Image (cartoon, rainbow over all chains, first blue to last red):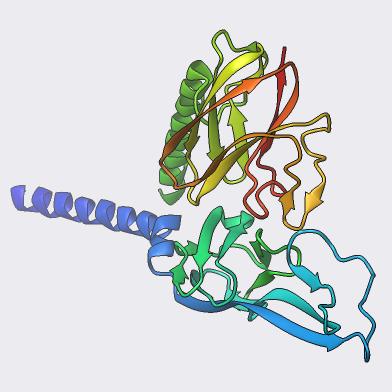
Length: 164
Length: 149
């Protein structure tokens, strides 16, 4: 009789423990813990071009404010310059459910203050440093911007999360 | 079972959030919006900088010597610029990725997260704008208005 009760009690306890394990594995934390890691590398760069007024007149059309586009007027020799900040690559991909580990390398400009409003990430990338952003889980499908506030509006990349 | 555990976690989270809100509301501390009709009894203004907000403890002070006690509670460097300007605080003219600093009254150069800096400025009656003028920060919303007198 006692042995039977003992077996029943152990079985019941095993069932409870199994239930708790299933419950834990279905939580966001557990899903996040076993999410595939998606490493993404970006580089902050500046593209430059130049011309001479003798061959190309200096453009006068307005450029947007924000520091992302710059035009340097002709010098004494008539040479003018143009530059813009960009991310290489400007579009990056992840699968829904991935844990993204984003690393950005600063090549041009002393620093870039970057925001990812959808993931509450704000950080600075200094020239010559590979900045690793605190990893985050991409739960939703969509297009999520990575915005350099220092050089707007051109210096921006989009993280595309797909249901793969 | 899983649903019940989740529900319990949500309830616990909600209670914690409510408690945190209560503490913030009671203390009027960092992250709390300034009282719109508050006037500094002493000429001392606490300013909290985060991404991408600038929250002063008051929005009106009496003329005279004013001390700004500025704490960077963000994750990246910030600065404080005090401008005397008749323009609306979100309509300053731009110069590239920064606001024009016409009417500059004082400045705390960029400082690191977790640090506190002080700035003493003598303010005459008028309208002022407080901002972080690191490139892009003003455009992102790091500003507030201050009325003196």
